[in-house]
Image (tube, rainbow, N blue to C red):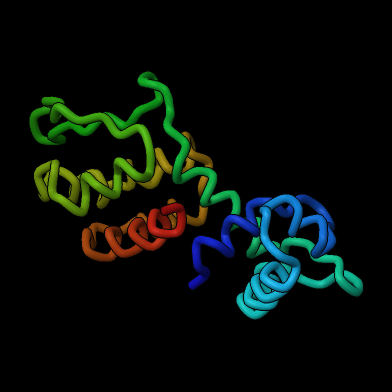
Length: 161
């Protein structure tokens, strides 16, 4: 997958942009920016619309939007509240971002069976879709396989660090 330095470049692309403009925006030499753009082209994240002018592909836009969502923290009112679905008792845990969800799932900060219930019933996916606005990620999270979810979230979170 794409390195963080490339994603920094990707995040700066708005509409069509020339290599020298990107170079100024990110503070890198033109040769470095050209090398990064070649890698982004190979990954299918940008296209060269005309000689030396680049734009994001649909895939590039989706990744850029997902990366912006990873760091977004929602308000207390919009946070996902984890409850024991058998008793209705809240687990002392609110999820305000994808990074928090990742840490909670990876490190088992909520009981596995409770998280499994939320995932199996689609509650977490629905929160990601409706509150965070990420349809593609919501589809990927609609499983009870915690290791698969950790992998999906880990890949996304690692791109922002």
